[in-house]
Length: 313
Image 1 (spheres, rainbow, N blue to C red):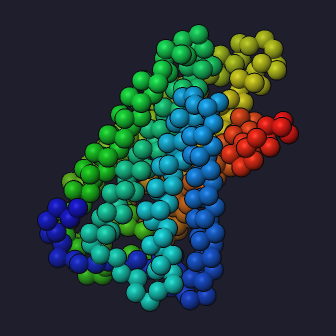
Image 2: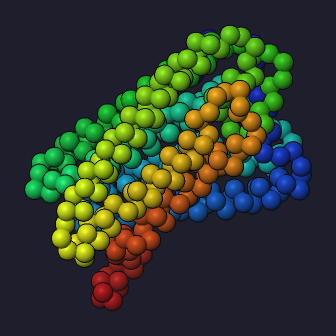
């Protein structure tokens, strides 16, 4: 992953959000609790969808993959942060830092594209229900997901390889919870104009393209729902989209707070927004999708109680 380390740096120091021992103890238990809740929640979503044939539909297929992505995302960053909070040695190797960066970029990009694909799924379900079976066939769903994975993996590799050309000097202290591109570039002593330009161009492409697909999908969904004469039918149609819309708002809201700003304004004040998109969003997604979802309630009940749940219902 190092692509020929030109920086001369062998490691960085991940100092986290605070160097105070008291703060670190509080942060350790807070992030450990959030990590465990995230892992359990997303694993349950994946298991419920996998073992319940009623949920073998395109919407839940993409939801299972979103949960897997969130699970992988937090596992890429939180365990190392927890170790650092309990250790005097806060070093992370150069290769380890770039590896963390690679998965961070790839998984955030993958989240973007999966959310866009889920928006398209809701558009077809609400606006073109008679074409749903053919427009969202199993083969096309796998094709959509494969495209999302390929683009995300290649984009993460592209930016990581660009980072191997950056030279670091002076302090290698990272006042952050993980190796993040903006923070690493702030430590660079070589010319970063090329990588900054490429990051802005590709970042806008991979941020605004999925967001545009989501926006257009929901504009058409809202228009279709408004034409439905029955209030109960309107509510039923909108309820199929509400969970996805809540996740999209949380994800893009926190992501925009962190990345839609110039590099020179990036500082520790953005830590709260970073924690929101890196930890809170993956933790909240299972709750958002299962809170008012009767199908998910049923699947989780059958997963835990089996036939006993079927007799109760």
